Amino acid sequence: MWLAGAFHDIGKIFVPRELLEKNVALTEDEWAQMRAHTTLSAGFLHKKVRDVSESSQYDEALEACIHTAMFHHERMDGSGYPNGASGEDIPLIARLCAVSDVYDALTADRPYRKAVSVECAAQKLLEQAGITLDASIVEPVFGNEANLARLSVA
Image: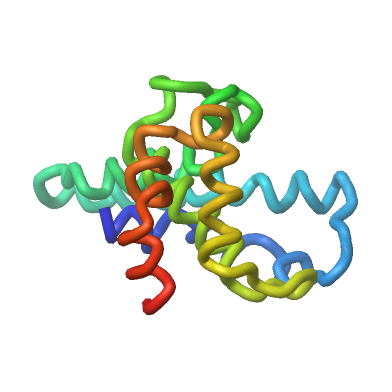
């Protein structure tokens, strides 16, 4: 899992830096460029898997990385991108990464806004549980006071 999480956004190396650091709303064209990072990540990793598999045994961890890269912005209700996949059509590893990616996005400063508290992030995640995010992942972690206390210390 950590490998998939580490590489899920590798396609952002192909997105212009000024878009990644922009502190105002993106235009529709800029959003299209930003959304392309999922397919760019998966394509880059797929090429690397093919290169590796020609010389050695295929690595299932790299396949998990490809699925995570491609699907981590898909949403349970089908409102995500790049393919509008929904529910169980989204690989479990990508659903896990989606939750952690949203949590990270909320709790880290961004050029366009300040980070929110762990408690605020947990509330936002719980509001999306079963809608855009997998409730079976969100609720056990963010619906538990002991877990929130641990996250607040981290």
